[in-house]
Amino acid sequence: MPEYSFTCIYCDQSDQIVPLLLFQYQGKQYWICPQHLPILIHKPGQLAEKLPGLERIGPPIGHP
Image (cartoon, rainbow, N blue to C red):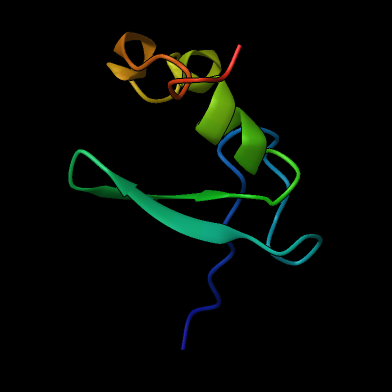
């Protein structure tokens, strides 16, 4: 049985080093570590290079 290793979309740390959270975007699955989850929530445009189209999503209403 092959061994799989998943990495954070932002920092490329493996699930062997940090816990990772799974999310889906445009029909694909991605992983992000808890340290970088706030970027996905509050500044999603910073991930636009790795997730095309995310630059159109601004921060949540009421957040700077």
